[in-house]
Length: 542
Image (tube, rainbow, N blue to C red):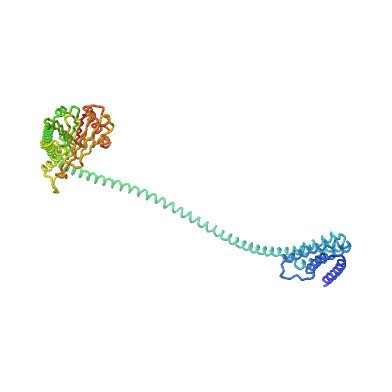
């Protein structure tokens, strides 16, 4: 109560003096700032601090009040006499410090910012009046109170620490007592375990001794058992060997009897095979002789090469049957026709390829040649000749639309040269005419009618006739498909394109040289490979 009364009396005296001094010299603007400063300071000095006001909010209010008070100090310094300025400001600051000290000491933890405000206000007062003992005493008093508070706080913390330490010590003592009890129990258990271990070691020694005796007896029994097993094994092997010898002897005897019987049968079969082989050789020789004779007959039916050479000196005929007789054949005819009071020579030559080769092909070639001979007696027109041969061949082979009718036939290229050899008429059934003009690097191909002679071809089938003018040095070729169909040892077929390239490459050679070249080339190309088809190539140079 004495502290509050003293504070308010001091404040009242300060305000009364300050009002009387300032009122004489202040302007209106200064009065407004001073009034604002007083209002702010009075709110701090006279108002009670609410219990729910935070330290930060109240500190902000103090900062605002002190700001206005600093403005007041600036005004008062310029308007008041020095003695009045010092007295008024110092007493005002002491009043503020007393208020701040009261707020801080009420709750130092929450109002910590008032501690700094106390020192700020006291230091400001000392700057204004350094010799004022009241200010110094207040500063020393506030410092001693802070030291007392910190000492009390330290004592409380020390007491709390000692209390916690005593609690920890009690817990530690309890744990030590528990550990001592457990250690005593462990020592007792260890003693019991040592006693039991000694008994166990004694028992293990006895067991080891017994196991040693058992092991020795077991070794003796094992040796005896091994000896018995060895004896049994020897006996078993002996029995097995006896059984094997008996079985082997039985099988050897049985095989001997079987082999003896088989040998007799084989001897009998070998004799039969030898007899059959002898018969086959005889038959084969007879067949070969027959085929060779058929070859002579077939060659006798072919036109003599001398006759061909006589009329076509610059020509060759390469003829290589696959077997002894051939399904390919060449045909030649010289016709002397009268017309307009003079005779005209026509030389007809053909390359034909009949169905099959060997003996069947030879039969077909014989029929084909015969039908050509019959047709040429009626006409020398190449188209009409092929038409007549087609009908004649179908009639001889009795070919019709019936399913069981044969479908054999032949492909042919037929040419007719005039006497001057400057024109050729050509008609073909699946076989073309090739012309190599003198000095040309290309082959001129005249295509055949795409039907065969005989087989499915109709009786009234017409074969297109082509008339081609020739010049001296031109070469004409007709052929079967045999040359282009030969295979090399690498299983590569010669093909028509390669055949054309070969013919173009040998145009500088004579016709006899061309025949030799083609003969040598095809044999080297084929190598050890079997000939796949009959070969027929006819070349004529104008």
